[in-house]
Amino acid sequence: MLAIELPEDIEARLERLARKTGRYKADYVREALLQCIDDWEDVAGSDDESMEETLEVLGDDELMAAIGKARQEEDSGQSIPWGEARKRLGL
Image (cartoon, rainbow, N blue to C red; front, top):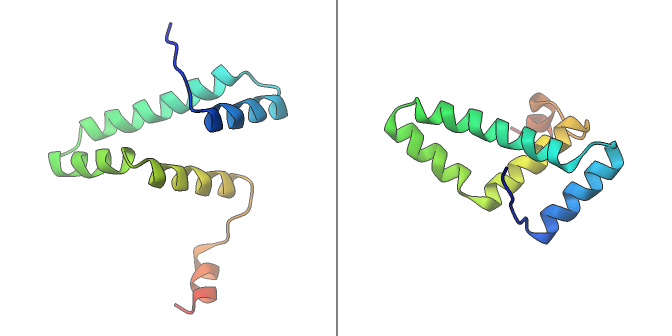
C-alpha cells in the first residue's frame, strides 16, 4: 500500500472528477501512475540523451500541467484539427 499527500488543487480536481463520473479517486490515480510508469519504462530503454530530455520534460510541472490540460481538451472535443489550427494562424 502507498499513501501520498496531494496538493489541495489536485485533490479538489480529483474529487470533482470522481463525483462526476461515479468512479473512485484511486482508480484515476492508479491509471495515471500506470501511464507514467509505462512512459518511464520506455524512457529507461532509450538512449541516454533522449532519456535526459524526457526526464527534463516530465520534471517540468508547468509543462506537464499544460500537456494534461491539452489532453483533457482533446478528450472532451475542444481541440481542432492541425490543418485548421495552421489556417487560423496563417501558417
